[in-house]
Picture 1: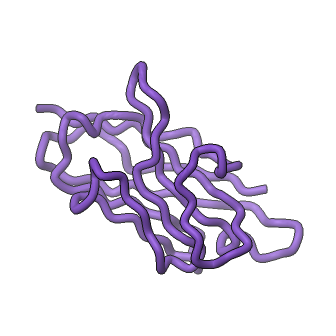
Picture 2 (picture 1 turned 45 degrees about the vertical axis):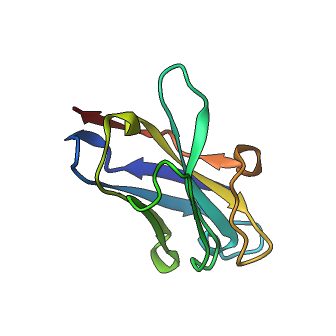
Length: 132
C-alpha cells in the first residue's frame, strides 16, 4: 500500500509558475516502496474527465507529457525521498483543475504508464487556479 499527498497548488496569474509536490508513504509487501511505482500526474476540471498530464518511469529516465503541456510542464522524481514533482510554467487559464498524483506498480523500471486504469493509488488532489 502506498499513500500519496499532493501539495503546492494555488492561485496564479496566467504566465506564472507553480511547482506541485507529491509525497509518498507506506511500503510494499516485498520491502522497498516508492521506487517500484511508476508515477503520474492527472488533472480534472469541473465537468470534465480526469486526464493524464505527465508520467514518469520508475527509474525517472522516461517521461510522457500530454500535448497540451509539452514544453511548459516538467515531471521529475526523487526516489531517495519518495517524492514526485510537477513543475508548471507559462500557466494558462485552461490549466485550471484539480491535480492528482497517482502511482502504478510496475515490474519494469523503464515503463511509463499513461492510462488512468493502470494507476491503483491516488492522492486527494490539489487545486490549481490560473486567472486571466
